[in-house]
Amino acid sequence: MIRPRRSALYMPGSNARAIEKARSLPADTIILDLEDSVAPDLKAAAREQVCAAVQAGGFGPREVVIRTNGMDTEWGKADLAAAILAGPDAILLPKVSTPGDVTLAAHELNEGGAPAHTRLWAMIETPLGILNVDAIARTAADPASRLAVFVMGTNDLAKETRARLIPGRAPMIAWLSRSIIAARAYGIDVLDGVWNQIADMEGLRAECEQGRDLGMDGKTVIHPNQIPVANEIFAPSAAEVEWARKIIAAFDLPENASRGAISLDGKMVELLHAEMARRTLAISDAVAARA
Image (cartoon, rainbow, N blue to C red; front, side):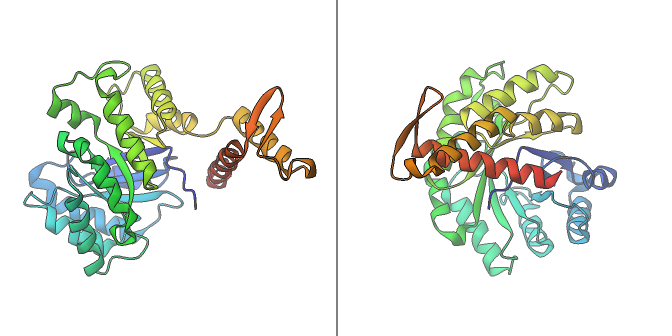
């Protein structure tokens, strides 16, 4: 089943008002955060509040994810145990750097009785994570790993590598592309990192377009005002949907039933384009179903 992940909004787990507002926002995914956005003295209260909100429900079709603190912190184990009991759609692990980070967390989920629908998402945000991204993605070949999504942590990557966060992200293109290739090899979705300049909507649009063109499935966002742009850019356009329907209709004609390639509107179209067209329509239908 294809699930739209055009926009994934981080919401601070310590902010009850923000969590309540998340139930009505047009984001595809809500990430209730226990890590970066929560001060140390509020961690325990945020954990309790977030897990209670997940168990209470009311988020409609939105995918609900809990981001825990790292297992090497004083809060990580308690966060993971509480998130398992809450049963969100996914648990987002920060600073995943080795395959063992995934397998250890997956063991905790499986032994702790996490619901079958609760998946693992991995933040790729450290130099070691980039170096090991192929091996991390490979864990998804085992269904027991529950690994479903990579989330690119571009701010942390900039911090750890000292790369500049500049328009066009030239210093990071190789890292982003490598992560996408690894993810696709094992059927994992990839969400792009955040755009920090909340008031710069044109910059956000440009970076969303870049992420889409690289092959990302959606964008993590930090403010509700960023959701519409991400939703627009990461959804198939009307022209793309029309072209997809035309390709499928052409291959469905009896005279093309046994052909691997055809000419359509002056273009050479192969069966692989028909497969891509079906995915485009599936995404479009899934987005329309959320309206």
